[in-house]
Image (tube, rainbow, N blue to C red):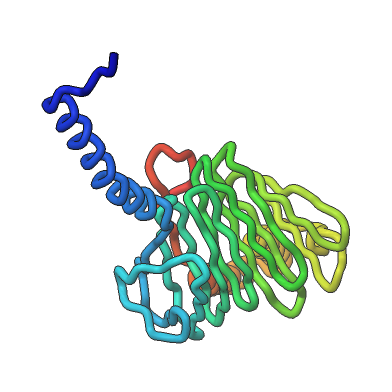
Length: 244
């Protein structure tokens, strides 16, 4: 014997099917919104994005190109909580998503902060640098006539160049140039501040009180130069990275 659905049951099934069909586009749209990574320009002075002057609060997307003027120090804040500060005369093409910050640094320099769970992967003409996701990392990458220089302030960052790789920890500096393997820059110092302190100590011993005055003035000048190179990147509380 054939059995037929009751009218009420048939109507209920049709209504449920209609609701599913209506909700599917909404779910797809919501998924697309979540999948589209973005960031914003926190400090815009002297910055151009894709060839156009930037403004504070401007939204940026993966694949954007950033260029800075001579004295510019713009700051980018990405949706994955990573931050990048660009120095003057910098050219950077940036790519990123929820779990990665990548890009190509053609000139100048950038200071990069990535929180736990976000990896960094940047390339230059001389080398590539990579940080893992297990801990926050804060590092500076600079391109100059001497090559590519990596200075790590927090975490661990790997530099690959010349068919070799080497990992730098907090307070260490590596440099690669023209196909050379990563190495500590000659002079034994891991950063400019260490070199300045050594020079100041030698001059102080030789020159006495007069030399000491000169050293104080020179040291202040060096500090100002360092401020010109990079400012301060705010770090999310609890991430473990150094703050301002």
